[in-house]
Length: 361
Image (cartoon, rainbow, N blue to C red; front, side, top):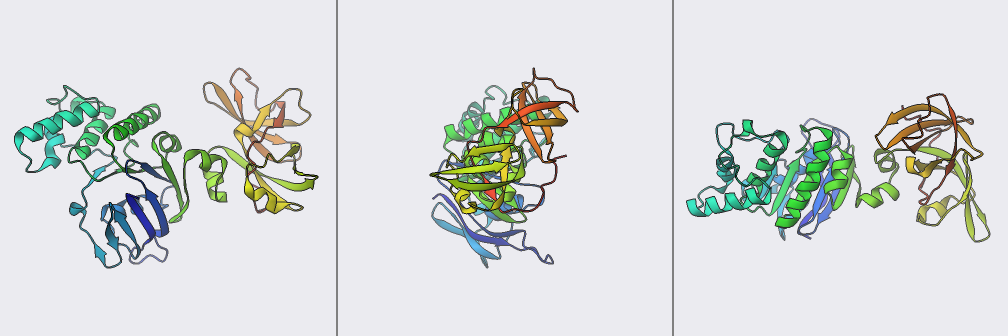
């Protein structure tokens, strides 16, 4: 592995709870990792520890075969050969694009410096922008300059801390795809922090979901969504609710009993068998619920959110349970209407019963 974080704990003085607690993760060379979670979950602290900006209380960090951080010992940030991209870009307003990008090249000979500046500007799609100043660029272009500057010294690892947070939503996702392509072309290993799931899914090879200083799951986007390791990951990623259910063995099949009716466990989730004969909470994603006028189960629309090609409906069953559904936007029902729904569940995701789940309002 190119980057290894092993059982890492970061403890701020005067605080009872560690900011990062027993976190382990790894990245291969050329991979892009993403840390995601709510504000205060520890993701930026973890990034800063990897950069050498925060001392570690226990555990260690290895980069390219070298242990760079452990309790009482740390390689200085400037000797780690890491690049950093921040959310405020940190461009020098009095320097043009070429001199901003060249800033990190230090004592590199002038001809080599100019060649490298041209190379990374071409990489980020800003050829011909050398003499422009930051105030003459759009937000997305400024972010590309910041990325080019970080890539210019050919860092062993690139760290990006909420780099798109100052941009509008549509531009953030598009730029995330573009940055991923740039990093892949350059073969750069990167660790990225964001609170935006669409950014994380767009850019990450591996995504870590953090909460209260702990890493709940380090996995690809598909498994985070369809095979969440903890109840927090299931609740945090995507749209969905927990509904009471029970599981019964009928012959060689497992039958799931839910407020939406019965269906057979397709067997994709290994933990579902642990609840046979008992009650549990079943995760139902919005894409598990299908609008069907002919379905026997009816639900009242209590909230709707227009998403362009679809609505996200929040629905209440007659039994009182709440579910969510993605419905094509030409099905424009009013709040208060009752519509038919049915469950089409390909991934059975179960957790211990926690009592009635709150409605997602």
